[in-house]
Length: 323
Length: 160
Image (cartoon, rainbow over all chains, first blue to last red; front, side, top):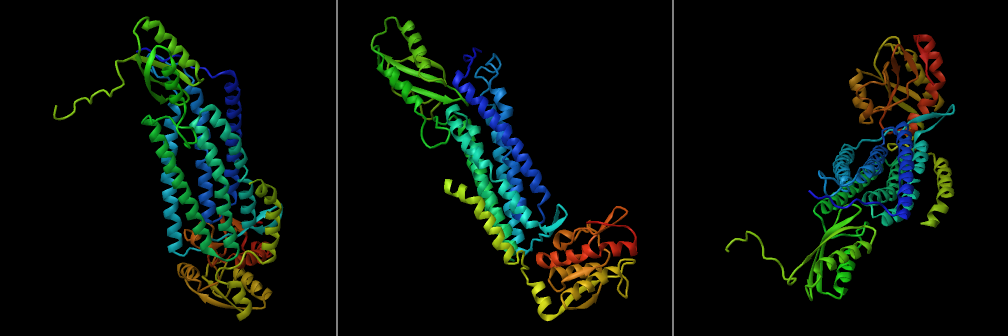
């Protein structure tokens, strides 16, 4: 099969990608340190345990980004004619399923603890030769675990500029991390005040949030796999590119009407355009010029197939019953 | 958001100070407060030489010392290990001793102290009612102080 053209990022986006990669490495290192510290001070607090697992799950998007980005840049080939940009979706799907499953399990766990009226024991820890309440150490670690919020704020604009869905999900999760940390801190502080149930309640809220995150991601990745009409990476609106391509074609002097069908292939857009020519002279060179012009519209517009048609009337359904 | 970030750290420091001043952590079931008021600590004991004997033993003496530090007396309940653990879980006892180790399967449901004594590869602990964190901290304090003396009597090495 004939592969789509090779795709390179423009130099300015290349620099942004290098920056995003650096930030993702920092994120992984930082999260690992948070996870290690939380393990040391976990005690039997359910909200700490839930926050700890949440932090482990928030490793999935940065790792998916770091592993999948080199794969997505492999050249399209006979075997993979559409390229490898969807590699991220696979990693992403696994992450979304993990979030849903763990969130559900943790939610059941915290409800179970609430029903059994389990009082979390948070004892002492020896720090530098002094015994202090472990709860203080937990609160300190949770405060330290809040900092990825700042990384998330750096990633959001990068995700938009690079049109990278995984990077955007990662930024979102980092921004949600501080909510998790605050939730867990409320649980631990509650235990400090003798409100044993606040720990399980806080854990339940965090677990519900993890499940909700997983559900959102699952819905997003499914929509990607079904080639939903292209959206902005934050899902706030329709992507404007298809309309721009259509307007460009419609404005060509030899075109009476035009429409497009584009799919978001990860970082690139590929698709078809249907044009109604006003006159059919020199159609082949005109179509070739139009393809080049459309590809120049945007750095993500990788390949367009232009099909001249009589009219834009819908094609009749295939194998429809009762014909 | 920027206000939160600027105010976050000082607020946290103030919060920690205020919480520490309120006697955090507190006991959800008010065990320590009740012991101070009634002057009675309800302690479980199961005999396991050399840690505990029918007459007391070094671990029981730690509890007696703890009670004295609060101006309370010890009301001893002799029973098997599993009976003691059940009673702790229901808050019918405050603390229990009997040569317990930290690999005890009941551990996660109780408030175990940190190990205070190591013999071979066994780490010895005492059991407190679950989630009574203030009581646990106070017992730990006395236990740490007595660990070397207990270790000297039963063998093994004290842990800090």
